[in-house]
Amino acid sequence: MTSAEIITIGTEILLGEIVDTNTRYIARALRSLGVDLYRTITIGDNIERIANATRNSMERADIVITTGGLGPTVDDPTREAIAKALGVETEFREDLWQQVVETISRYGRKPSENQKRQAYVPKGAIGLRNPVGTAPCFIVETKKNAIISLPGVPAEMEHILHESVIPYLQKRFGLDEVIKVRVLHCSGLGEGMIDEKIADLERLSNPTVGLAAHTGVVDVRIVAKAKSESDANEMIAKIEAQVRERLGSVVFGVDDDRLENVVLNLLEKRRWKLVAIESGLNGLFLRTLPNSASYPDLSVDSLTQALRAARADSKADIALGVSVYAEERAAEMVMITPKGEKTHRITYGGPPRSLPRWSMNLALNWLRTILEEM
Image (cartoon, rainbow, N blue to C red):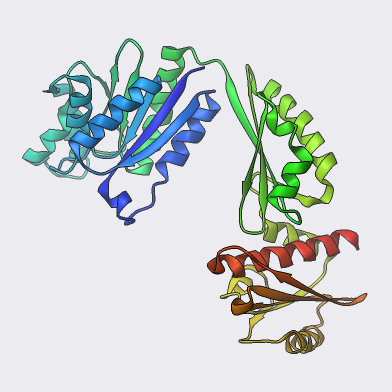
């Protein structure tokens, strides 16, 4: 199986000034090609460190993809770093320089002298055209590896990845497999209890099954490798059916589904109106649910009274309230439906900062189960 590693380059990423979205995008593209991604790493703008990281990745993986550091300034070191990793010099390429000139001329400008830096690449590299930016890209081939350096600007990187890199990888490595992923979102059982129910499935080699715990939600990830998309989908469907049979209504959605959207869709399907009140949720209900209000420091009795009044005033079918008590690491939940009132107290053992999100997700899942039962 062809393998890959991704190196994102930029001190601004390490400082938290910008968020790296390129790694996720490239990882998904590699997944669709059937390429195993071994590792991702972020390196600052330092030639020696980038070179060392590149050499290390070349030892483990067939494909090494870098993003960033291809600009015209002194602190854009990728070209020199890749050359150093391979033990070659950089060379000026007239064809790449003409690309830079042409791109800049579209804006009615002439390139500055320092922009000639962008036309230097490691000796023997394959130049890649960048029709949407000023930074040419390149591929350096060895007997085993393909080292591919792409821009850090997401729009540029994505265009070149699809137009040039993916066709190159398919031809160079004879990629004829696909990797498909299906994620089942669960709520109502903890990671440990879900693990007990599907432990044997987690030992499979293809498809593989894994768990990822979030705040009040657990994901079951099913990954299949096959010669075709239809074969992979069939493999996933068989395992998904087993997971659903064992977990039942704990599974609330798949892939891009979100718990709050599932709840809102159920309300819309029933043409029910919801009113919600939060206390201590830091505005999570306000940003998620319609007809929401926030009050400070509500006891369960005060929360219940406020919900009764809000439901009556708004003529809502159902009312949901959550009051979080940070010092007690607990929350009170109240539900009022046409069938009556229910309360539920939950206690939390995780990080205090996650208590509001955890409480909201458990409350939304409680509402989901009530709606599905009615």
